[in-house]
Length: 147
Ligand code: ATP
Ligand code: MG
Image (cartoon, rainbow, N blue to C red; front, side, top):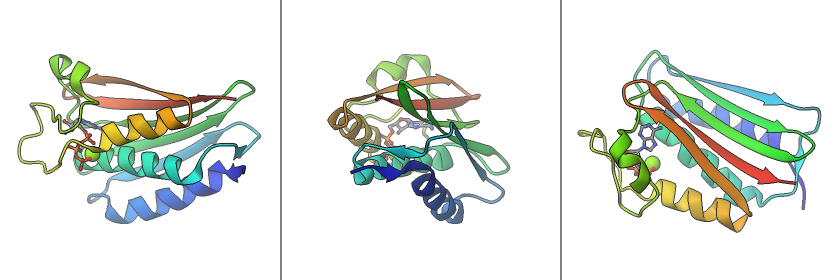
């Protein structure tokens, strides 16, 4: 059944802001007049939390994390953009493999499962995951779902 995407995203923003680093600001914005979507709320919530967790973990203090949702006549989009460590080019094609971790993660903890889960959950909702990343500049993940 349909649920309020904006309400969900606002709740998650508030929760995740509490575990963000010092002066890491999660800025949430929605584009579009509509806010109801027909997706699995629990799966989408889990995806958003995974992506925000990564944005927090892989970027430093005093940075912005941009969290956006958009509903237009064709699609629903969820994007997360950070100004963190980025993902090395040669690691990008392995990113969704279970237990894969990029070579620049250093001593940042993780198991390498989060993105594989995101990919599978988005697949269950017939959506797509895309990303763009530049090492030492940042990363942007986009989830898209056709209406
Ligand atoms: P966990 O299972 O706890 O999520 P993880 O964060 O290492 O562990 P994934 O979320 O699957 O695993 O991410 C896989 C790898 O992709 C990470 O180890 C990291 O190298 C890279 N990565 C993911 N998101 C980002 C990001 N926002 N910025 C930089 N690197 C990222
Ligand atoms: Mg992760």
